[in-house]
Length: 162
Image (cartoon, rainbow, N blue to C red; front, side, top):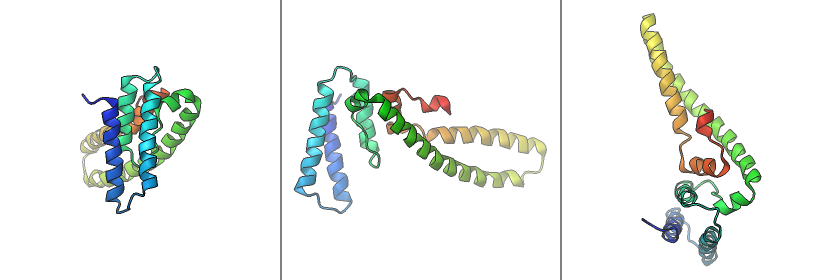
C-alpha cells in the first residue's frame, strides 16, 4: 500500500502532467509553488494527530479527481470546521442546481417513451421504473471523491438528505 508521501508525490506528478497537457509551459515559479504546496500538506498532516488515515485517503482521492475544485487540507478544515461547513453548503447548493437541470433534461427525454404508450398499465409501470431510475441517476452525481471527502470532514451526509 502506498504511503501518504508517495501518494502526494504521485499527485504532484499528476498536477505537473495536467499542466503539460494544457499546452502551457510551467514556469519555475509555478513548479516551486506546487512543490511547496505538497510539502506543506505533508507536514500539516504528519504533525496533526486528528487526521486519520481515512481522512488522508479521501483527501488524496479528492485531489486526484477534482481538478476544478480547490480541495482543502484536512488540518485546515479541522481548525475552522464551521467556515468550511458553510463553504461546503454553498458548493452543494450550486452543484444541486446544475445536477437538477441535467437530470430534469434526462427525465424530459425519457417522457418521449411514456407518451408513446397506450395502456394505463404500461404507463403506470413505466412511471414507476422512471422514478426509480431518476432517483439512482440523481444520487449518482453525489458520490464524487470530493463530496465524499467533504462529507467526511464536515459531517454533512448529502446522500442521507436526498
